[in-house]
Image 1 (cartoon, rainbow, N blue to C red):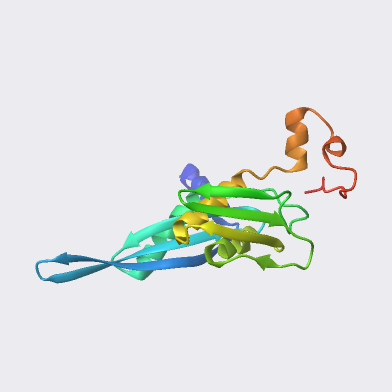
Image 2: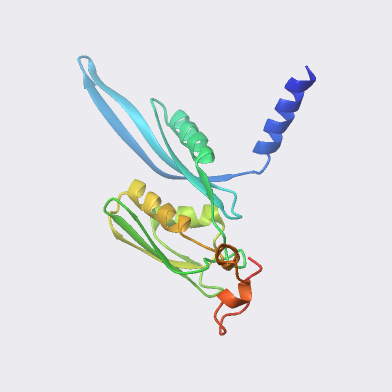
Length: 184
């Protein structure tokens, strides 16, 4: 009995970090059958804790709320962690690709805001990025744009992780003209 209560407490603690979610796209699809048409809905949702974790999911169901719920559950299971500089921007410029979708993401000085379109904006807002300049080149399909954005964000490396990988100090990795962004 005590073990079951411990499991429940652990599960509640794991769900405790409150995630914000953003509905990016909803698509109505129809299947033509003998009696007419059957409608279904596909939802694309981005979920994040706004502190460096983000994920996306897609769900399909006969009702919109159920599709959104399924997409949110999948997004919570597929989250990635992204290191942020000063908790507000990216450490370096990068590109991401998926299919015909290509995105370019660049760091930005404080006060720039999120300069990104549609699905990319949702990813950055859920991630907790406050200053970024990005451009989507190629596919305008929201699924491909989100996948390309996450592909680029997976390539993000903090100076601390690069220094650890090379066996050096953070000060040796950073350029002399850059401020010490080692705290992030």
